[in-house]
Length: 96
Image (cartoon, rainbow, N blue to C red):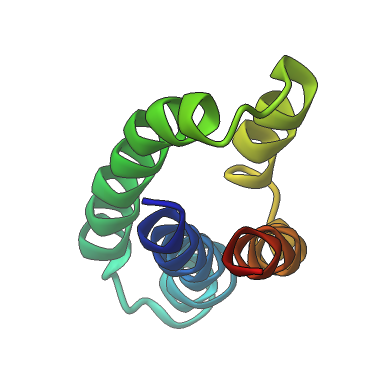
C-alpha cells in the first residue's frame, strides 16, 4: 500500500507542478487554455491522494504531525520529491 501511495504522491505532485508552472502561464501569457483539463486531473488525483493517505498512515503508524506534513506536501510545489525520498527510505527499511 505504501508503494502505491508513493507513486500516487509523485503523480499528484507532478500534476500540481504542471498546473501551476505550465497550464496557468500558458493561459495567461499565451492564450492557450487547457487549465480546466489539467486542473480537473489534478483535483481527482488530489482527492485520491488525501483518501489514500489516511489508511496508509494507520498501516505505517505515522504520527499525526507526519501525516499533516504529508497533507502539506500535497499543496506545496516540489514537496512531493522530498516526501518521495522519505517514503523510499521507509519502504527500504520495511523490506530489511
